[in-house]
Amino acid sequence: MFVLAVSFVLFSISTIFTFWYLYGKQNDPYMDEIFHVPQAKHFCDGNFTHWDPMITTLPGLYLMTAGLLQPIASLLNISIMEICTTYSLRGVNVLFCFGNFYLIYAILKKLHNPFLLAMSTLALGWFPVLYFFTFLYYTDPGAIFMVLLMYLFCLHDSHKMAAIFGVAAILFRQTNVIWVIYMAGLAIRKELSIWMRETAGKKVDELDKLSDWDLFKLTLTTLKDCALNKRTLLMKLLSSILKQVYGYLIVGIGFVLFIILNGGIVVGDKTQHTACLNFPQLFYFFTMANFFGVFHLTSPFKMLDFLKFCLKHPLYVIMFFALAFLMVNYYTHEHLYLLSDNRHYTFYVWHKIYKRHRYVKFALIPIYLYSIWAFIVELKHRDIYWKILYFVCLVVATVPQKLLEYRYFILPYLIYRLNMRYGTNVGLMHEVLLYIVLNIATLYLYAERPFKWSHEDGLQRFIW
Image (cartoon, rainbow, N blue to C red; front, side):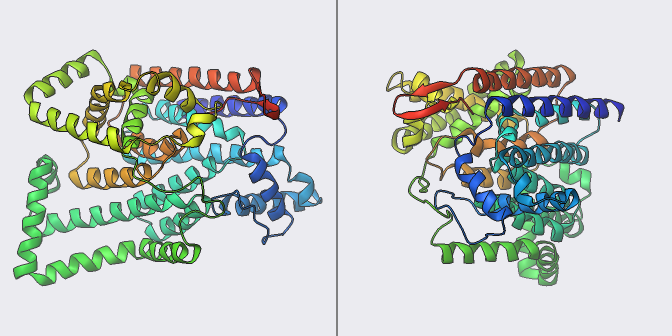
């Protein structure tokens, strides 16, 4: 606990100092804040009917902001509008940041042995893509907070509360409905595991020792046998599942009704947020995951194991190359923002790597293969049901997105990182150092290296 307390103090001091420093450099609303800040002020003023059509997410952030600032204003005996400033609005995300730090710790504690818990919490608290947006009034910190809170309640089998926070998560960002489905899947997985032990007469360790394929076959065989000969046992399974997931089911039905009434998942301006089949998004995600998790996913020994895997399974490798070639060739999309907005890492990644030559996107396929292989290796301790559930959610969360945007990868990566095999002491230390360096570099570019656009007034700043 002492190490954790020291980690939290270090995290808090660095976050507060960075907040003050960055606010001094950019105290006016910047980029998407020009929409979020005025909208939040309308909600603080009690005007819940005004809506900026350029905002595409639901009003969860603004409702939470007004709910947090109103008691503070009452305590200070002032009007809420006096403290509903850009400074205070960004401060709300700092509170979410501290909340995310605690939730990461609580989830890691539930999922893993407490050894090196503080180091992992510190690393993920400083996860660069998420940490940067702590200092702007964006939806990301609050959206992640609600999903992590939902996840924590789900892990403790408090599914009613998890479903309630699932609603809150959707109000921050509609695509968080994917992670409501993930929580429902975890509840089903647990009930199925309990039922399998009782019905198939297997102990926990016996099921754990089965390979993914053997466990899958045993499940199908047991379900088929019960459907034909022991229907009461099958009804018992369905009943127990329904008791656990009915809250998530209600949320899902409500979300479907919202889509029907709204005419789609996006509120406000839909023109730049149309869904498509962008299968290479999966490759971008796995590459990003390998970059941020490099000290867990890449080593000389792992690369040697990867070569052995390729030599042992040449047919798999050939099939992957063929499928990846088709995906890259026919489903690569270039969003207007990706091509024109030079304030983001993705702009430079795309122009300096992918646009360097027409065949670069195909030359990267071996890197994609290694990234996926290394990614899966770190999930060996998870059963086939967890893997299927996670990868289905990953596909739904990434593939429909036309824009390559690292913010969209935050939640899939955090869920993965929280569930991967526990890292080594050296690996965790290197991970923390990598994140510190990336944070310092990005925040320095944002604060100290602004630039101008010829067609627009004001300074532009580099962000994730």
